[in-house]
Length: 361
Image (cartoon, rainbow, N blue to C red):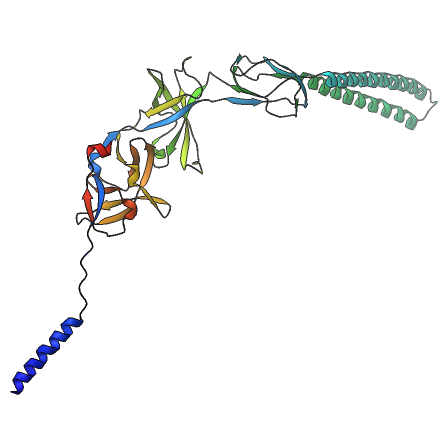
């Protein structure tokens, strides 16, 4: 009888305890995300960069003295030769200064001649012992002082003559006028930029290269340059590589010298540069929607074999219409999320969805 009661009591206790246990929550459903496989976008390509046609020599010229402009001899776009007149200041004041300086020279010459004549007379008196040596020395000093004043006057006259020449602004090289800010009646300061001259004989291409590939390029490397709207390619060569990256873009500026430029090449044209040296490299392109910023560094979400999402830092390269270039951090045959990445968390289970061709377009 006691055993039966003990059994019933235990059964009742188990029933009560089982009713107190919380219900187990059902696992969260996987979050649908669109994905792509890296192998689908990894292709062997030669690096291409977009740049702009520039002149190696771009001269900003201005007057060396201040004054009022009375003449402008050229317009924007005109071709000029070295030494050609660009603009001219009113020379009235400089001419008066030059005339005054010339008069000072004549006065100094007359004073020197008078001092020399007086010295010769005093030397004769000294030989006759009519004056002392100290008296003669004073006249010799006057001659030296007059000669020094003459040299000073001549130097000042030369400066005044030069300033008269400075009223004419001349082209310092042959080229095309790219900018001019000079109108008759305008008062300008010394050193103020009046015109910019582009040397058309030294055309080159300026491009920006990411820091991930800068070590593979060197001055003298050959390049093929294609200009928008022109059918054939031009030969180029790396002339200059900036020693430091741009603080804003973190890319290095390169200058590509055009070896066979012709009259069809114009300043400001868009250029496509392809380097011929070095083997083709493997490039990974992903949609721009797949790249996010985490801790100020680009990253993507990689989907593993268990359909779980993991954030991975990557290094990006060029950004084109086809997508973002990934230079490091991803490998072929890996799967990444392309749409819906902002809702993912580390280790989240996902349901991979591959978008159709109509979405990819």
